[in-house]
Amino acid sequence: MKSKADPSQVAGLSRFFKTGPGQYGEGDKFLGIKVPVTREVVKRCWREVGFPELEECMASEYHEVRLAALLALVEIFRHAKRWPVKPGMTQKAPGITREQCVEFYLNHTSGINNWDLVDLSCYPLLGEWLLDKDRSLLYELARNGKTLWEQRIGMVSTMTFIRHGEIQDTFAIADILLYHPHDLIHKAVGWLLREAGKKDKPALEAYLQGMPDHVGRDAGARPASAPGRAMVISAPNAPVPDAPRYLSMPRTALRYAIEKFPEAERRRYLNGQHSL
Image 1 (cartoon, rainbow, N blue to C red):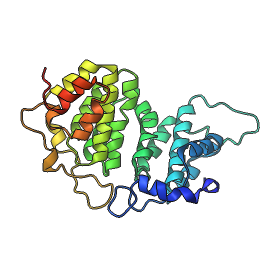
Image 2 (cartoon, rainbow, N blue to C red):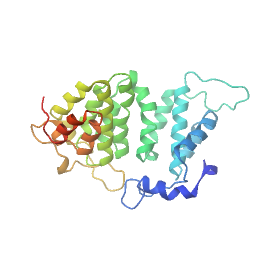
Image 3 (spheres, rainbow, N blue to C red):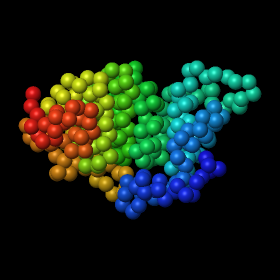
Image 4 (tube, rainbow, N blue to C red):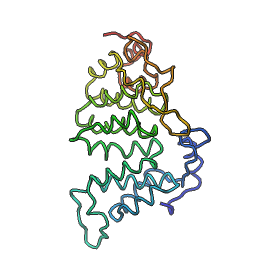
């Protein structure tokens, strides 16, 4: 990864991922490597690494190195039950199980500290693992995650369920995070609601026009004292009593959720004029 560094890209990536003082990615460092280049490195190397190498990379000060570790972990997880052996290949990781990959992931969320690191790793690993298991872990992350990134993992991991036609967890976890104060959670909630609506538009409409669940009022039970910390719900995002979700949910989340609706229908929602 370090051999692929491109200093000319560092400033732009630092701005894009908000690394300035007080921003959500404050203090993160970049090598200047675009995601396609990182994926190429991972494609060449993932079979030759195990947990010691992943541990080292997850502790890196460089964003792209942590991303490479996460993408490699996803590949190891995917192949854990069907590892193809190629002649002459160094085999460090064939003994790793899927459960061990999940444990490693959950033990290293401190290094998963920006939205791309969450979105490119959580649902192909954690979501896939939970597809045929109890999903209370995601509800716990959404309610009590130590950082907004852990809370986002709880939401975005439901993408795997949606792709298998299971959308109720998405709606339920969206209610937990619906009135979260951070824009990055609004975007995640709206994005996953939109994806659920692609599978079942009437279900999304019923959700938007229904009343918010009370659990959404206390998500993020800790005040933010540093970038990325979980946050308490603030008054501007509090639910309106006896009003449907679309009237009180953050506008960013609503815009994302209804992005694929016909224009006239979108306007009715945005103008607060839609009704069952």
